[in-house]
Amino acid sequence: MAFESDVVVREIGDDSWELVEPLRYVGNTDRFVVPAEFRTDFASVPRIFVWLIPKYGRYTKAAILHDFLCEESNAGRFDRDDADGLFRRAMRELGVPFLRRWIMWGAVSLATQWIKVRRKHRVPVARLARLLVVAVPSIIFFAVPAAVLTVWLALFWFLEELAFVALKPFSRKRVNPPRFTWRMS
Image (tube, rainbow, N blue to C red; front, side, top):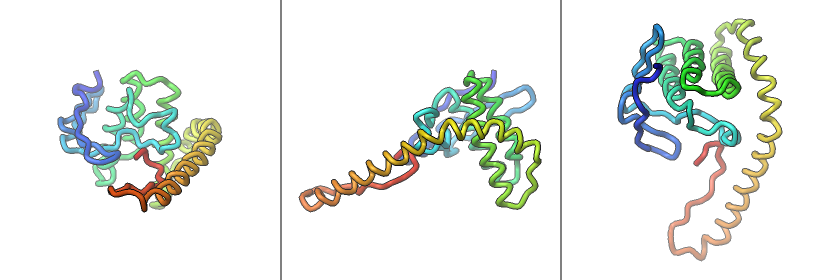
């Protein structure tokens, strides 16, 4: 048993949520409690990739735990590489299929290594090599759909902008202007 509790959340923004109840994870040697009122965006998936990896799914508990451990890492209380490894292990324990789990782990691990490089920390060559084995095929697989979706998202935003400008003078109600964003909202 990996997680001893369910995810109970309250929406606090377009793409942010707050735990109403603590989320408990128990591994072979690890035990973590993500406290109530912790804020999360579930899986941090850019908009152009949600067609394959939605922001929530079987891996939601692992994503919340990972968000929490990353915050602990930012505060100097946990190692971010360990947070990434625990994310992959928790997804395995939740039954997330092999390829999806490794793609998601590769994405968060590349982000971790990027953060380390920006902070001028040493990144082990073996770790980068292992990440590249996952990252290169993933990038190739995602590149064409991401480019097509980016073009269509930009086109849709442009059409929304035209409609907004054309119809705003005739509206008696407040009209929300369109915004181009990589987030879901």
